[in-house]
Image (cartoon, rainbow, N blue to C red; front, top):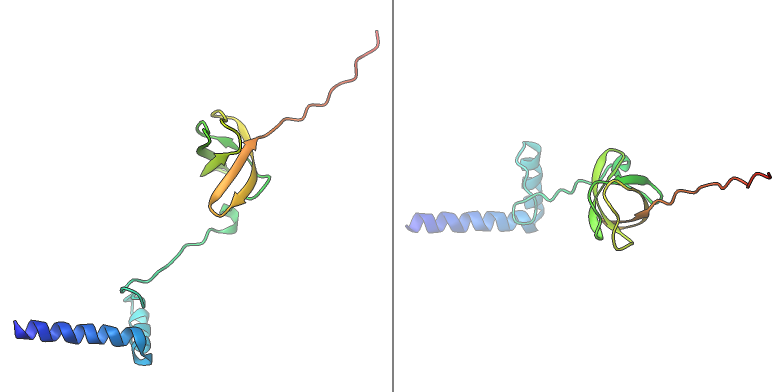
Length: 124
């Protein structure tokens, strides 16, 4: 039992040194190089996958709703399913929409208004 306690203390001291000293930084660097991915906090390496520019949805991009938006739902932009919020109370499934604002991970949309050109009335 005594050996287990002593070895636990040694391991805790070692990891304490790894977190706060240049020697520990070197050990973590070498472990990372040989394939053991450990980080400085809780033994985990924090990685965040940033979206690629082609995956980003920007203002004025048009798409189609995949579900009813009441006001949240799913839409498709460039073949990618995306979580969106409607600026209106409700937008039906299958309607064409336009992105009006992107705020962090929230994408606000509205119905795309089809502009119609009125033909002048023909004289009889």
